[in-house]
Image (cartoon, rainbow, N blue to C red; front, side, top):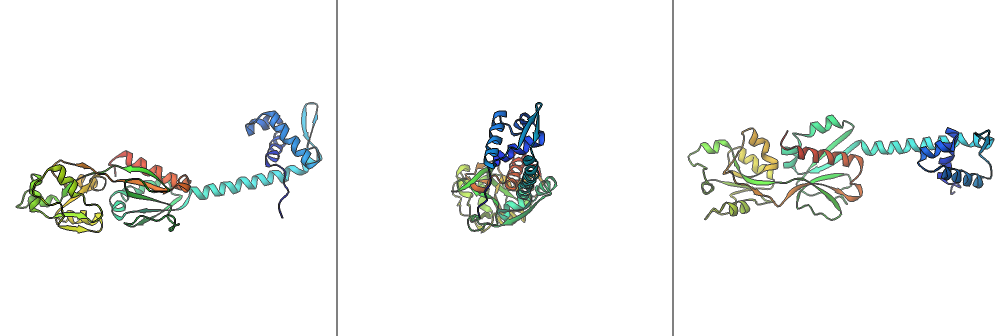
Amino acid sequence: MARQLPSLNGLRAFEAAARHLSFTRAAEELNVTQSAVSHQIRALEDRLGVRLFRRLNQTLLLTDAGQLLLPCVRDAFDRLAAGVERVVQHEAAGVLTVSVSPSFAARWLMGRIGRFRLRHPDIHLRISASPHHVDFARETDIDMAVRHGLGFWEGLRADRLLTDEIFPVCSPDLLKGTLPLRTPGDLRHHTLLDDAQHGYWEDWLATAGVPGLSACPDLVFDDYGLAIEAALRGQGVAMGRATLVGEEIAAGRLVRLFDLGVPADLGYYVVCPEATADRPKVRVFRDWLLAEAAAGGAQ
């Protein structure tokens, strides 16, 4: 059966006025005018067919009907407030599942994630590492993702996280060999490493203006992280992305070659469905990611 309830605004005005025994203070609490409170209570009284307040020597008192109604209304609003707070706390805490590529997870996120855990211990992160873009309509357990692309995905909010630059990198051991890497032209004597998804060598070689050097890499991997791992092991020269190889360069495990970088068309974006973009957990993690990116290279 449908509940036959009077106006919730009227009940709210009644509860506040009954608690303060003042229409003026009730109006201040509810951020409305005193006349609005009086009007809402009068409408409630008309709906119930009883008087809820009476004035005596400029003092506001509850009638017997008002005293009977107040505990029920107060309890109902307390229950509503508690229920709303539980929902808010549920949305602000609990499990947050984030989809990222394996290379981004290993080379950017893992060095920073501890700071998020210290700041937000109530949010339990579940990192789903996959090279494929999540389908939010089908994979409803994924809350948000970090994607590498142009930043335009229908139905998704995308916030630019990192702008990239590409340049050749290799192990310092490769510089000690018999075939030096002093100029871009020296690359013809070395194995070029790349990942199948991007193919960065063509853009860089065109900018470097190296004649007679094929842009077709000698060794191609399905995942970018594997190309970098091969470079770390001295297997050849990879096309480094500034966002993902900064730690290796700073530690001396990789060397940036030739001091020539090319801006990448693709960048990293924090994405999620528009409908859930402002959920507290999602917003907290997005804001943290953007703040970490803005802080630069600190690990």
